[in-house]
Amino acid sequence: MFFLYENSCLLNWSKNKDFISCNFKNGVVKTKNIIFATNGFLKSLGIKSNYNFPITLTASMTRKLSDEEFKSIGEPKEWGVLPVRPMGATIRMTKDRRILIRNTAEVHSPFSMSKSILQKRSINQQIGIQKRFPQLPNNIIKSSWSGIVSRTRNSSQIFEKIDSNIYAVGCYNGSGIGVGTLFGEQIAFKAINEKTNEIKTIEARNKPTWLPPQPFLNLGIKTRLIYERLRARSEI
Ligand SMILES: Cc1cc2nc3c(=O)[nH]c(=O)nc-3n(C[C@H](O)[C@H](O)[C@H](O)COP(=O)(O)OP(=O)(O)OC[C@H]3O[C@@H](n4cnc5c(N)ncnc54)[C@H](O)[C@@H]3O)c2cc1C
Image (spheres, protein in one colour):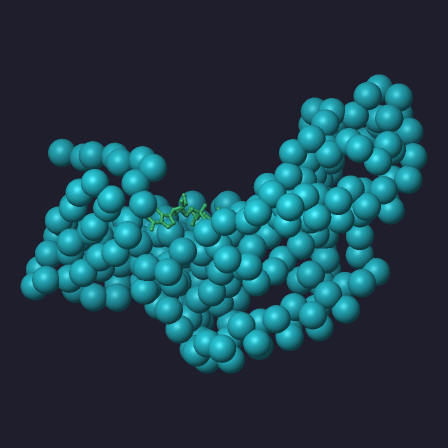
């Protein structure tokens, strides 16, 4: 029998002999096997703590461009561009004529972002759109949001049996839509001891490398982000 509990934050967990106890606000789940797939929150659950860290990204999407605005930018089909440098911008033109932009990556609490901080990022993204498309009005952002990605030092992913009945998967270094789907499927096969060619390929890859403890880690990440921001300063 399977149960799905949504909106249930795992507060902490512990292993007692062959069982894992998962503590939630309103109850405890005891299980024989567990797969941790919380990506940027793996570290906060004590999973592979010295091998991954969360980074906060913020993105904004505009309203649909009007016919006139759309004409002014050349009536393109949908497109997407990725940055050459890690701190550059990811920009997309959607099929329904919206511009989507992400041009921030920062060390920030993964648990929340205040409205005022989000607003500052949103203004920065409006300025970015304006730089590239000065013909568009300066108030076309409809929605801004922040989210968490997980990073490792060597851009490798976590895919591991970390104890006899505990598995962990995640850390897609900001591009997990495709990779994460594959890794999620394959860790489930691994947990039921099914062998696949994909598992072989995944496990032949480099494993994430060790990260120094705090405060050295954040100091290192912040310094690197400043350096990367400088290298990407010509981006929007
Ligand atoms: C702004 C932004 C733009 C991005 N753009 C791209 C892109 O263009 N292409 C791309 O491939 N990827 C992109 N990514 C990255 C992509 O979103 C992630 O790689 C992908 O979502 C990872 O999927 P996941 O299921 O492993 O983790 P997530 O989608 O992060 O899901 C983790 C889940 O774990 C839950 N969780 C965390 N802690 C707990 C807890 N204690 N108890 C219970 N549940 C918990 C969270 O609520 C969340 O639902 C972007 C990310 C952001 C933030």
